[in-house]
Image (cartoon, rainbow, N blue to C red; front, side, top):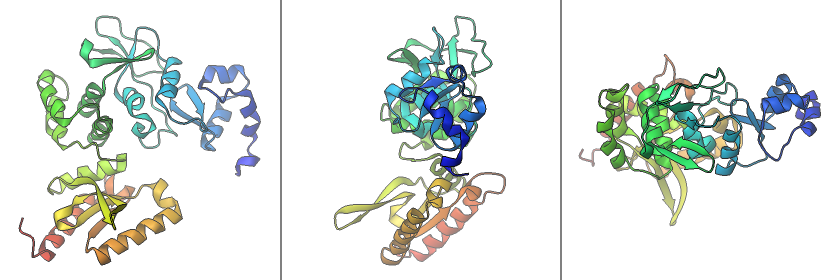
Length: 319
């Protein structure tokens, strides 16, 4: 269906498109859940927080994220985990397909008070110290450091690593500060995973897919890669490789659906990779979703095989 043919367009004029609004406000304006869903599907609205919507014409800013959270966070509560990650890093921190299945916001009360009981949020009690929290205007949230540690220790590995990568990318703390914070988690849930994975985090990752591919890189037993390797021509950066080993001219790239489906961009990327492989003698392995995620993923096997082939071909390099 073309956008202009959608009956949901008739509802747009009833909505406050200059600010965030709730599902309840939309209903009072005569806009059904079905119409809202269609408007999201058409790319006219987005819903980074459950029960709250905003026009896609409004840019993702910290002020806008705060305004959205003000609509859903009750007094005396703070946001944590993925909701705090979104507050700190913006839409970049949203997990894949978040526009289709929006997770419940992570809203907690302090452990000294009764847990929040609300079916629309993921909640409970969360023990935090004053240094774990930051107030951004009217919203209280776990700090980027605490947020990264919580996501890394409490969620599945790819999700957890992406959360930590996102928080590192804010530049508000370093890996050294993560190491210094590790003793405080002694005996707590997920501490073994946190200790094992924290040293592998990297704020240079640009997407969930890149983080997942980097995890497969480590599964293959390869040396730690550099993220975002600049390719320079005539003193100007013309391309960034997702990850790799510069001394071997070996790199891996993740092509997500959004990037790959833009045919012109995909062709441009393919041309640059071909030039790098031909003129600069790089070996570049390219991966799509099915090779990186799921039970049938084979990225680790492909990466190991490619790495060994590159080592054999680079007889001038001693490792």
